[in-house]
Image 1 (spheres, rainbow, N blue to C red):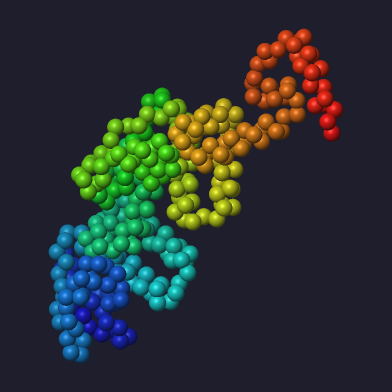
Image 2 (spheres, rainbow, N blue to C red):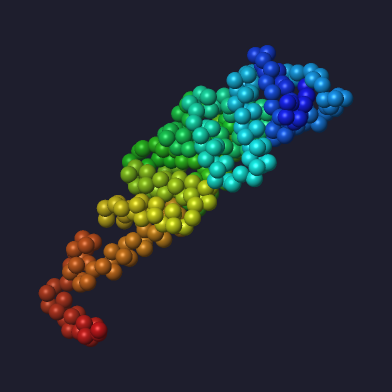
Length: 311
């Protein structure tokens, strides 16, 4: 069960579901709550000689998957020992999860069985990022083939012109309107297999996709603790759109109560207004009809002549 390695470290040997022995250091093994509990129940024999191999009978614990979990456990144990900066750890994690969907799902089942919180969190974030490409909850379940409690919580949305889309609950919570729907949903632990009936959005699909893109990106920026400059740079690129698109987004952001999006879209409109030097330019820029007769317009000009005299 455990023995000293050639480096003097205690190592743990487990028997995989397909009857192969897999070894990991003690310090790495105890990052799994299941293995830590097993080890707490055991006593090291005199001299640290190998006592027995403990079988892991769960079907998710093949030797290949167990070695992959052990790779993560060992690397993060080494990170802790070496005081590796978080950025370097994140870079390694991103490489570690470059897996096909099927591999990602099987690894998630193994991490769940062994109860490895850090690995489950990493895999959950990766699945969430990929799930955003799906249009329905059923498509997410079919793609990853995982039990409901291991899939990200989602909301089903429906644009005013009938297009379906899915938004992760964590991202959707940035909208006060959508958060109310999230708070009313049962959790996976309560047995829900659905995200509920689709939520009707007050805008067409083109605007709805932009709204969802903002919610997803700012959720990601929060999760990665991005600096303010990165947020501003993304916002500026995001706002590069035609007038009608921006006006539709302003309205949707207001109705869905997304304060950050309301702020940046209204600020952009204010910049456009400020750039207009005359009423005619303003009307032309925003396609505003002139409802004054020439006589009425001349009278208004005379009444406000003092404005033009100001430096």
